[in-house]
Image (cartoon, rainbow, N blue to C red):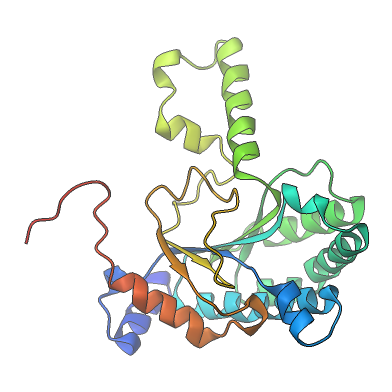
Length: 254
């Protein structure tokens, strides 16, 4: 089985890039499922079904490319405000998807993790999510982070509460509360910050996603609706990313 480094080198060679210009962590705000369905005269749930197929296709391509982590914004805390029938359909799809994806995850050595709050999710979703995480916990390939019942502000609040509890118990000194400490208490603990954030459907918002982690991520927005997002679209985003001059607040002199 190829290592991340070998896959990155092969990807860079094929795309004509320096291996250093291939993002190791990609985050995606998957938007446009409902609009895709509406354009075809279909119910919104049909768009979500098609979006699920796109998830598997793009995730597997990320594995082939050598991407180390892929984070997908699947369902936000704010999404509970959607019509009840749509939410119920989504929860059913998540339950089924979490079962059906297991053979693919295991075959491709992908580890699934969850970002978000478990409280509020239906028991069926929580049960299948926990089982899929358990089955893939020892996989050493790409990490697939599913942001489900997720909110960036909620994540920071939850991290602050954990830190406050440790401080109150005397397990943490005030001087040790720094950026690294906060990062360790976020849902994404153990993951590098995203290099590239992709948003589909031409939306120009962050939508409460990874507010702490995307401080220096490069943004790429495409008009393509998520169900229509192809491998070639992902590679276009990577090629655009490779042209960016990432300075991280400094000035790079030529």
